[in-house]
Each structure stands twice: as C-alpha cells, then as structure tokens.
Length: 137
Image (cartoon, rainbow, N blue to C red; front, side, top):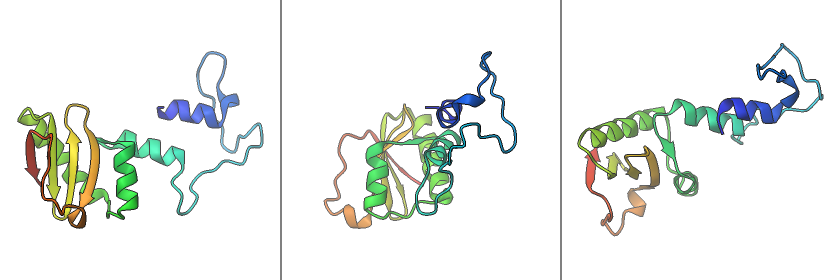
C-alpha cells in the first residue's frame, strides 16, 4: 500500500472523479474522527511513511523481533544498516549478516529487506547460517 492508497482509504470522498485528489484545509466530509498520531501507538500512516523514506524495509518478522526483544532502533542505526546494505550490494551479496555494535540483522540484499534482528543476548549460539557475507558497520 502506498501513501496515496492509504490516504484514499482514510478519506475516499476527497478524490475527484478524474482521480485527482482534492484536499482542502479542515475538510472532512464524513465527519470521521481520524486516528492520527496516537501516543505509544504507531498509526498506519506513520508505518507507510517510514517505509517510503527508508532505503530498506523491515519484514513483519523483523518488526516483531525488534519489538519483542526491545532492541533500540533509531535513525542512527537505520543509517548504519542502510550503509551495510550498500556495501553488501556492491560486493554482489544475496543474504548478509550486518553487524552494528550489539545489533545483528540478517538481510536479503536483493530486496533490501531486514529478515530478522537480534541483540547480543540473542546471539548465544554464535552461528549464523544461510548467509553469503558479513558486513561490519
């Protein structure tokens, strides 16, 4: 779902018959209460916006692992992971382990998707399988 589709699903009456979006300040014809920016709860719009501005994507599994393992995730880490994707891609990697300090992510380089993520406490076995490269960022 892209940003335009998401907006249409929130406010379908603001689309003109010719497909051009007509948005006016304060317009809400159906008087819907829009769920935007609730504290502690990432809205669907925010998720789509983050995915569109990020140079890689998080799989559903990776998002779940990051939340459940309470892995610190911020723009600095995202930039480092993106750099790891770029380096792995430049060497022709397909599946990479990207290590950033205490964070490890398994990444599908071709689709630029983080498959899973773990911090040092989850790396007990110290074995990573089904990868063809490792990148330290």
